[in-house]
Length: 251
Image (cartoon, rainbow, N blue to C red; front, side, top):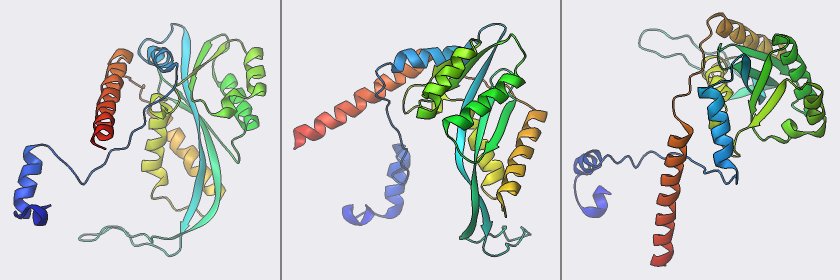
């Protein structure tokens, strides 16, 4: 830009800073086209902000295709003046899928690693949750629209377990599922720099992370109301429509 307009690079930086511009950054987004977006959002956020009395609210999802990665060469540890090293390439030693349920009020996680993520494995995980939650307690489950969660056999399981109620997030709204934040923490703190020579080693590391997190649980706190989110989405939609209209007119 400095070359194009014939000014110094420092002048360009000052102009960007003055106007709060960051052209080197791009933030990704996707607006949901779910026709029931508002209703689903209010339902899910309502469970987070004002959970039903004498009930458990669980955020459930699966983190699939977690790879057991081993580096091709040993790295060097961190020391004064040098960061830790790790090869850019790796060896794949298989994958696992983590099914997890985050208790919104207690902050504890029920987790189970499995080899696949079909409806059969999901039902097995639901049976695990059924055993973990105290008998007679109503269970409200927040989950996404993955086909596995709506399989006919899953619906049959729900019919046999009337204390469970499913609440689906709007499509393209993974941010509305609380467990996604916990998955990000797992990736950042345990998986990203991990070295795993086998699936068993990977699963053991995941199970240790769950146990450690459950030793010091932190309740999940949702701070923004559904109305505030809907207002922000409306503003974003209007801004995009205005830009697109301007582009069409300029053509």
